[in-house]
Length: 63
Image (cartoon, rainbow, N blue to C red):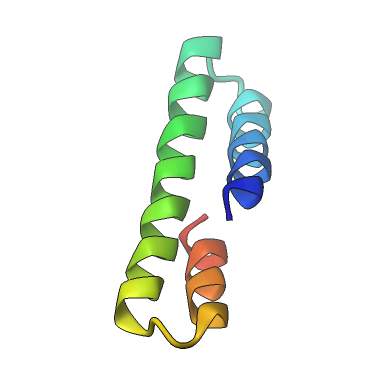
């Protein structure tokens, strides 16, 4: 799961930089996106602990 947070953060960083945000704003956007992805994954695990695929779908949708 942690491996998937890095691409999510890098993707968010790239999107922010393409929108001509400053470096600090882009890094903040990447951090918030990674935290949102983790939150989606954690919520998915809490709602259905027996089905791990639901947590990963929530991770993708959170980004």
